[in-house]
Amino acid sequence: MNKRKTLLIAMLAVFLTLSVFVFAVFAEETAYAGSDLPVSESYVLRAIHALEERVYSKIDTMIESVSERLDAMQAALDAQQTTPPAADTQLPSDDTAQTTVPEATVPAPSMEYTVLHVMKGQSVVGSCEIILRSGTAAALCPGANGISDLTAGADLMANTEISTNHLLLVPRNDGRGITVTSTDAYVMVRGNYTVTD
Image 1 (cartoon, rainbow, N blue to C red):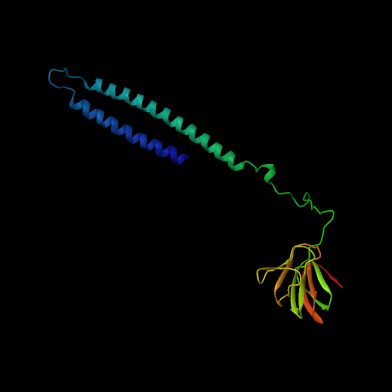
Image 2 (image 1 turned 45 degrees about the vertical axis):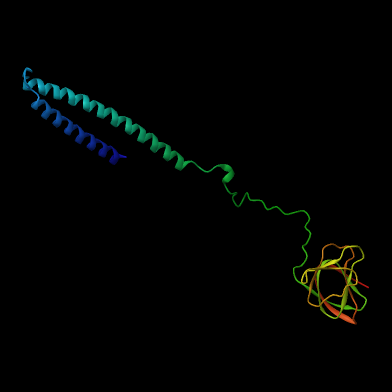
């Protein structure tokens, strides 16, 4: 801020000096022109001195005004930088942090497939994904809805033959699934399922 004041004062001093010089030259050249009465040197010096005082007074007033504004801006900036963050943005400290534990949790179904060895006549039903790995099986659909063959992009209705290595989806546990038709079969299952006879 001191550098700004010094620079401002220096610029105003240069301006004042040039103004006085121009006024002095103009006064000297126009002191006597034609029928005008000549003036004395002391009169010109007094006029210059009065002008200097008026200019210096204006400059001092301007400097004070600018300084006050700069001080106010600096104070506002300092206050903004030292203001602590709002309470709702502060993170809780370790001693006040609370861990919320749900009262009852339901375990999520395993994301891994379970391999089942299923015998002829047995069925795998439930809300699950099914992949027939070996043997033969048919779709089990007691209602009007079928099961989704995601690999083929088809809806398999009751007693439709299941292709091996196709991913089947049973969306609800409403008795739908597959029934093994060969002597035995290996089935991969993921989700909630039941093997029934």
